Structure formats: structure tokens, C-alpha cells
Amino acid sequence: MKIGIIGGGNVGAALAKRLGAAASFGEVVVLAAPWGVVELALRQAGSLHGKILWDCTNALTADYTGLEVGTTISGGEIVARLAAGARVVKAIPPSAQLLLSDNPTVDGKPVAALLCSDDAAAKAVVTSLVTALPAQAVDFGPLSNARFAEPAMMVIVRLAFGLNRGYRLGLALLSENPATPS
Ligand SMILES: NC(=O)c1ccc[n+]([C@@H]2O[C@H](COP(=O)([O-])OP(=O)(O)OC[C@H]3O[C@@H](n4cnc5c(N)ncnc54)[C@H](OP(=O)(O)O)[C@@H]3O)[C@@H](O)[C@H]2O)c1
Image (cartoon, rainbow, N blue to C red; front, side, top):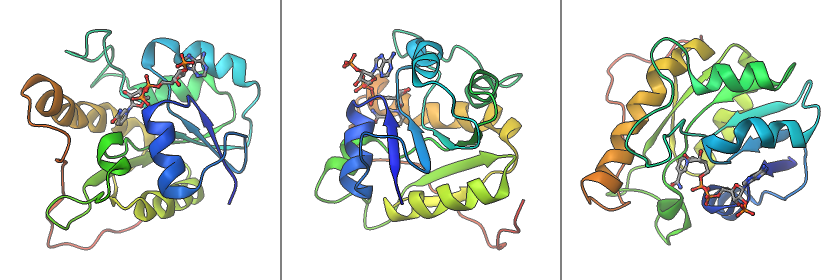
């Protein structure tokens, strides 16, 4: 599968290492740019109509202490508005440092990524990529649920950067009920 990356920083490097992604656009385009440049980066990328767009961004404030959007709208939904016709899947991956390390799991277990999308086929493709990282791919329903997934992932940002817990941490979902496709 051809994977292109918008934003060749830490996350871009981590996904390239784990998935063999190339810096040219393919079937899946990964959005891994800082929130402040997302609009510009998508404009510069040109049409993504029909492409699967894996949105990895945290809609962080510039000082990393908060989110620019949340609970009533999400970064994922804003990305979908900006990238007209793209098949957007919101899934914030594990930390780049964890993925770039020799052991991308925590205590032997993959950490969770919550996948939100209105496109079931696109979500299935990104699920396979997330699983390959490895991460625990959790189907978190429609793209509008990114309103809650994005603040949840902020727990990791605050633990890692605000509370100095380092990068070898992540969320995991414990559930006794099997997932049903959403
Ligand atoms: N770091 C993590 O562990 C982690 C985990 C999950 C999610 N995220 C999210 O993923 C996104 C990327 O994080 P990161 O840590 O990889 O950031 P980063 O290391 O700062 O890299 C961002 C990249 O975006 C590029 N960029 C800047 N303006 C651009 C434009 N207009 N078009 C295309 N690319 C542009 C930068 O290029 P230049 O260097 O040339 O400016 C840089 O290579 C952020 O939204 C972050 O919140 C990060």
C-alpha cells in the first residue's frame, strides 16, 4: 500500500519506520502536521478527493496545555471540512518516541488508538495500519465522536509533557464485549 505523509516530523518519521511509508501521496495520506499549520498544509497538498486521509493531529494550543477545539466540534471534523471529499479517519497514534523506540509496546501490550470515521471502508484500512504499528485499534464510531476521542488522548499529552511521566505510556481499552462494526 502506498502511504503519503503531510508533515515529515516526529510522527511522520515514526509511521515511516513502522509502516514503510513514503513521502509521496498514495492510497492513504497521513496528516501529521502541527494543528496551527493544518489548514495551510491541506491547502498546499491540493485535492485529496477520494483519498483516505488519516488524521493523526492533536488540536493542541501552541503551548501544549490545551485543545483549540473539543466536545462540540473536533479537529477531525474540521479537517474533513478543509479536505473536501477526503475519506477522513481520525486516529491519534501512539507517541512518536514510543514508535521510534526498539520496543513500541508498553509492558508488552500495544497502546490504544481510537478510530473515528463515517467511512467504514476507510476505517478498515486505517485499522490495519494502526494494528501494524502496533497499536490497539479501537473502533470509536463516527467522525463526530472525535469530539471525545481527541480530549481523551490529551490525557497522554498531559501525562507525558505536563506530569513528566515520559513517553512509554498510553491508553488501553478493557472490555468484555466484542466490538460490532459501526
Ligand atoms: N509527537 C507525537 O508523539 C505525536 C503523537 C500523536 C499525535 N501527534 C500529532 O501529530 C502532529 C505532528 O506531530 P509531530 O510531533 O510529528 O510534529 P513535528 O515533529 O513538529 O513535525 C511537524 C512537521 O510538519 C511539517 N510542516 C510544517 N508546516 C507544514 C506545511 N504547511 N505543510 C506540510 N508540512 C508542514 C514540519 O516541517 P518543517 O520542520 O519543515 O517545518 C514538520 O516536519 C501534531 O498535530 C501532533 O499533535 C504527535
